[in-house]
Each structure stands twice: as structure tokens, then as C-alpha cells.
Length: 69
Image (tube, rainbow, N blue to C red):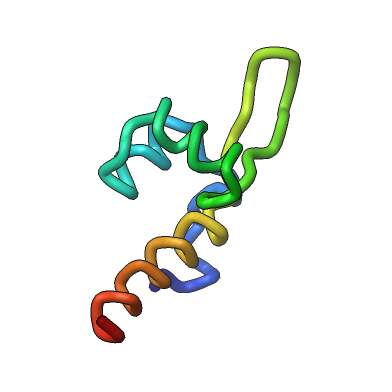
């Protein structure tokens, strides 16, 4: 988990979310529609972004599930 004062933008592009999760952008979109991933923020007519803290929390939850299994 990262510190709150790390100077990273609060939003991340779909490309960055895909890199962080090691999942493809289309898969992240499908998962978000199914409620299995963070819902993106619509920034414009053709632009979305993900909230960095939500993506990081999603990743942390998947790591925690590894220990619970």
C-alpha cells in the first residue's frame, strides 16, 4: 500500500490501471460493468479514469484473499 503523500495523481488512466493489475483494459471494463472492479470516472465524452486509491484497494483485497484461501 502506498502513502497518501506520494504525489501521484488521484486518477489513473485505464492503461495504468491495466499495468497495475496485470489485466487488460477491455477486461477491466467488463469487470467494472459486472461490478467486479472499480467503476471508472467519466472525464469527458470519450475519456475515463480510475480512482487510484480504489484500484490499490482492489489489488490489496486480492492479495488478502490469497492468504485466506
